[in-house]
Length: 369
Image (cartoon, rainbow, N blue to C red; front, top):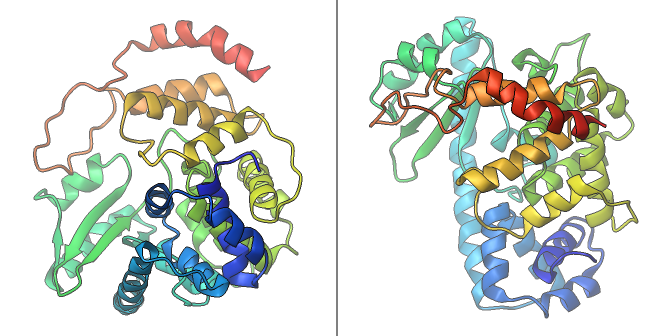
């Protein structure tokens, strides 16, 4: 394959863990891996439980990777605690009429992995559909043991938070880290999707459709398939629901190219089918091998944005999207005050909009072609 052995071993682990396939290939590729590099990549891509299951299925014993056993035990306890918390959230929201739904993380584990403790997650995610109901829900959380990670007024947070989420923590022998959302994408995104698309409607939309939008929007639209865990989620979904009009659903939300790129990556690296490569897929592949976050530095962030442009549907204006992105990251946009040392400082993209249009017009025009 056209990837390093450590990444290849991670992809092979999917079929070994779930289908007991490709075991000999997995054993062979694993023998060529650098243990330290592979371990770092497992952490970065958040696929430790699946890889550990694959090692067990293949009968591979390795002292370094035995550390994963303890991690998986802790994850099982964490999932039980987080699931109990979700039940409390949903019960309160039903009683008070707050429109809400479970979101990402534990929800994917429940629906795609049948609670088999094979999906890694970090935080507990919960989505409130109406921003005006955030304060009521947060106040209830504060009365039930949660603390805001930033000592700010909740109304100020809701007004300023660009990402439309707030983080809380509930201290205990195992802390619960909650990300409370009231939006499902950044404001510069041009996807035709909203939080209401994630809510199951009896006669209009089933669980399989809302789950599809959730995966496609977050894993592909926002994160550009840069984590192998996200592709594993998508592969699990396709195994369960591939008999639905997925391409049409994606097109309606301006996410068709996101869908096609993700599906092609699943087919090539998980199902080992021949697939054409291109600039976008090569950027994603290069990112898989990099254990540093694409959000941390200006250069990786610029690469991530180039990739973001590359997965947009044709009808999306690359120029307008670039302008919106610059505005979002400039000092003219609301600044997120969630950090304790919050100061309204000037952004890294602090350029006049006329200059942005002039500088990018020719570049984006060529890119569209």
